Image: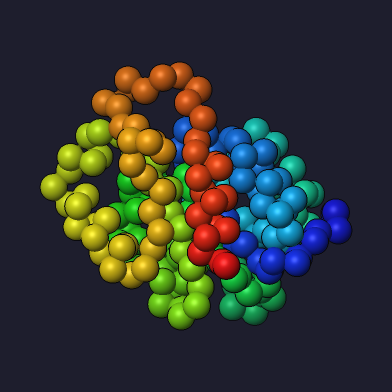
Length: 189
């Protein structure tokens, strides 16, 4: 396990099983660590299965020096991550965003995020990896409004993530990692 600089504190990275999650290490974790963050990664159960199958989960653990969480721990188990100073949920599926907006914490990733929304001084940044159909769902504006009221910084908009119809996005579209990192810098100044 590598020695990790911690000049900026601990960045909690939460990721869902969405296109582009395979670039989490190179797009977000490595650049955040280069900026002085210690990174603690938690994945939704499906994202954990995806990244475990590709070997990426093990690479994240080696890089960060911390276990990647995708399952709850037993109450008698020690906490595997240090306290987090800022959370980033990227990519966050429409399902993850909706559950977070409603306060549903039915997996380890959502437990971290819902607790962070109730913790003063812990910024939460969310990149909703959605398509145009998700955005047209009648509940979507309410979910976004709830998260904004909770102080969540949302990475969205046509300049950052243009919405396409389902199955119509350009292939291998890169996630807006630079925008996510800028939001972390802004939220933690």
